[in-house]
Length: 188
Image 1 (cartoon, rainbow, N blue to C red):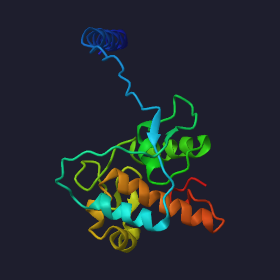
Image 2 (cartoon, rainbow, N blue to C red):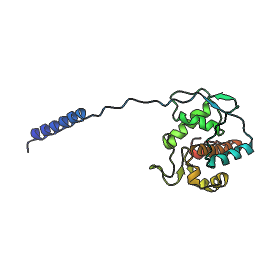
Image 3 (cartoon, rainbow, N blue to C red):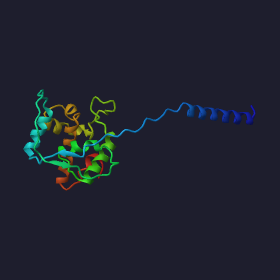
Image 4 (tube, rainbow, N blue to C red):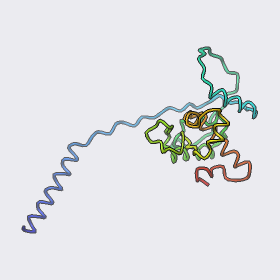
């Protein structure tokens, strides 16, 4: 076969593929933004209250009554509006995470790095069999999780509130010892 014909055929094929790609290109949907509340209700909890809260979060309730809170409202610390996973910040602060810019931004990076802001529970298609929930708590903590939340790790770490609470416990225990609290996620 002639070299000019081979090159011509190759160029023709390339141009046809490019034309088809342009012709059948799908329109990209407009970006949507999730509105994040600017304030949350927050109160200082004692260690016993934290334990009671963990038990309360694991218990299922059928009550439909509503109550009003008299706790003060706290504004989220300022952070870069491009911070990833900021939809989890109110929940994180409610379970103990510090309400400061540096911690919130790093927590956002952690949640993005681990799950792209998804709550990857044991029923999620991306579940890897070892790490649970939005903060990807590793199965190495199974005994601690099951003792603390009085239930199977798979179920308790699928609840994003409990998952963030346990992540904060890991973080704060290391910080209290003078170590880097982000070590379980290799972010030190």
